[in-house]
Length: 124
Image (spheres, rainbow, N blue to C red):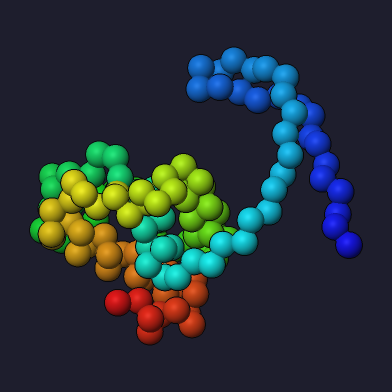
């Protein structure tokens, strides 16, 4: 039996802080994310804009990156980044050096492996 779709009514705020009345529906889309998909989402969130080799010298990570994320946090990041970037999600690494990319991948593999231990051996 299909469930009814509820329309929600409230306010929305734009980037300038202006509020406006709005209505919306909440949808549910099934996503099947592999480890590399989750890694691309983390890379998109934390490395897409502004990480340079100066901020990631000699294989170190930029300051302010989380040391751990829960499964829910990783999946929320995946949904948000995928919703925004779609098929271009993996383009986050286009501006990183090989050294920066290696450093980022190591960090992402550790985060995902800690949150999803069953995926650890599949993260290449």
